[in-house]
Length: 410
Image 1 (cartoon, rainbow, N blue to C red):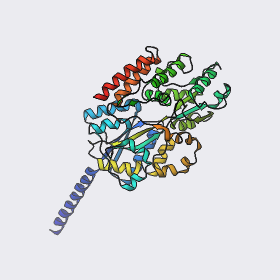
Image 2 (image 1 turned 30 degrees about the horizontal axis):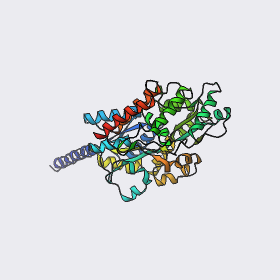
Image 3 (image 1 turned 45 degrees about the vertical axis):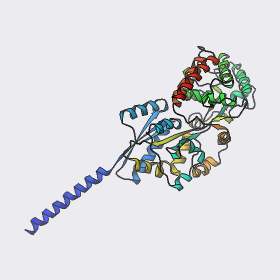
Image 4 (image 1 turned 45 degrees about the horizontal axis):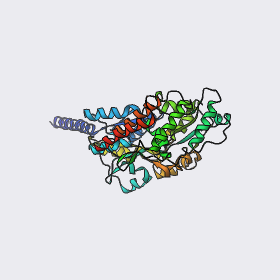
């Protein structure tokens, strides 16, 4: 009788153990993280973060999905509409204002110690009404890369400091009669507008003036007329509207571009893909003013996520730990966003980064207003019409400004 009871007790204990195991397993969560593609290193870096986190939090899983930037916004829009959003997503920070307005983004509660670890300027684009809605995963300013060998062959010993010098240098490169082009001009896909802002801002223009669009001001017309004249004169690559940012960067890595305006990530790509390229970095050319484009990309948590606590744990304990911040920024070629990261020798002792950090006092950011993405589409459409010769700069920009003013009123 004792043995029968003992077997029953053991059986009940075994059953309880199975039940406990099932309950524990049910508590395990899968965190879905969507990030944007920067380079061939992106997948590996985020998979490394996921592995690190899962080892420290056994039973939980982190799934990383990498999406091309050009497809990311549409993908997230579809997910939002279908109720299938990930838990964490990387976004262009300028998208965040619409996410906040539509109650899609979850505000973040950070410890004072963790928050104090960031370079404060990079937190402000993600802050609305005193609440933080995202963490800056990537930060950049823009500068001018130039091919030292091409400039030397053209008889130019120093990089041009202003737009007149850019035009003159591009003419001399064209005169070489090679398959190289003097000045790269992006005219396709995401950040086509930003490539024009370099000219707009340095010519004294503004995107918004007194609550209205500034894209048809005399400075704006002058800025676009400059680019159009360079296309017409053959100083850029043929048909800029057929090339996106990656395309013109690829031409530069091939040694076929004299000057290109872009961000610090290209340094890392050159090191890996074109280590013999003889290049240097200088400030954005000046017009009436100094300016560069300041950009942050953000990791945000969706309000619809049922795993917000786990999501914040992944971000604060792993993704934004010094180890992974340094790994990400060095491999992708971005500026540091955290103080401890910036103090690491690989950043602190890098003279090339000064071309970007020295421009930060002159950095302009995309305005944090609703409907901004629709306004960007309007600007890009106007630029492309001018680039391909379907419209002149002034009427194209006046039409764009009228459309943007309508969007501002919405």
